[in-house]
Each structure stands twice: as C-alpha cells, then as structure tokens.
Image (cartoon, rainbow, N blue to C red):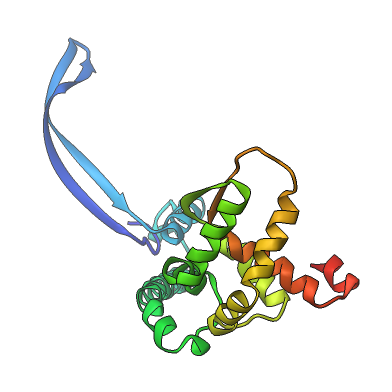
Amino acid sequence: QHLGVLGLIKLCDDETDKLYCLTESGFVKIKEIKIEIQIRSILQHAWAEIEHDIGYKGELTIPDVLKRNFYRVAALLETADIEFVKNRDEQNKYEASVGEVIKTNPEEVDINSSSLRSYIDSSQVVKDTDEQLINSVNWTLKEEIVHVESLVEKFYFVGVRTIKDLDTFLKSHQKTVLEFCKKWVGDRKDKGTVLRGISLFYLDYVLVGKTNDPEFANRF
C-alpha cells in the first residue's frame, strides 16, 4: 500500500511455454506467469515517480501530517486529470461542429487552429486560389494542410479575427495574391511542392503590404 496511488492496476494470468527460471537444479520451465499491468495518465505517472522517492516506505512509517499533504496533492492531480479530459472532449466536440457553423455563421467563428483547418478543408475559394497559384508557378500541391498555428498568429497580427473576415479578404485580394506569388517565385524554373492553404500564407503578406507601413512590415 503506497500513499495516494493513482491509476488502474490489472492483474493477469498468462500461460506460456517460452519462459524458464534458473534454479539450483538448472532451468525450470514456467507454465503460468502473473502479470501486473499499470495504466496511468501522464500526471498519474509523474505522481507515482514522486511518491516512489518520498513515500515508498508505506503509510505506517509516514507522519499523519505528511500523509494529509500526500492525499491533498494526489486529489489535486486527479482533479487536473479530470479537467484535461473534459477539455479534450470539448475540443473534439468543437472540431466536429465548427465546420457547420462556418457554413451558416462565419462571422461568429474566431480564427483558431481548428476553425482555420476546417475552413481550408471546406472553402472553395481557398481551393480555387491554391490551384491557380500552383499552376501559375509550376508547383505541385500536397494533400497535407499548411501549418495553421503559424497562420493564426499572422492573421491576428494583421487584424483578421474571424473566418468571415478571412474569407472576405481572400475573395477581394485573390488576384493580388496570385501576382504577389509570381513575383515571390520570380524566374525560378524548379518545380516546388507546397501544402494546401498556401494561398493564405501569401494573403498574409499582401495584407501587410496594403498597410504601406514599413515599420509594421518589419515587425511582421
């Protein structure tokens, strides 16, 4: 019995003919073996490591005041685990529903990693701009999506806050995005490979250029 042990422990029986035990009389075949499987979250494992170093001698050798401290910390970690699971479930629920909200009320959807990924997956204007872009500079488009986390930061920097804003800017600056990409690539003849949503990467730079503010561009 250890202090505040967290996690799930399963004891299993396994029949085998491949294990041997060395005894004084030689190797003896083990016909049955007991297996202990410990299932823990990352936080539970962290607690187990701490508890092993501090409280491994068992409850009877630990003063009551320290036991209470152990139990309180164990309870806090268990609460944190529960909250992390809730957040994960809420994130999954949001990712499953944000696509429909983008279709009906894009002005209500803030730009974040999940919403931007969903927008790139579903937006016809992104698809069309990407295809025109790669055709104009002899590139190949991969199935993977661009690094959305970086794009989210860049869009917030230039003041684009919602999916509706983003969609409006891309539609109104589509021609400029294509022209800017051609100038960016220049006369290079090598065939590059880019990710889906690459047009949004160039849109960021177009929006920065529209400010006509060199200091703003340097900070970008």
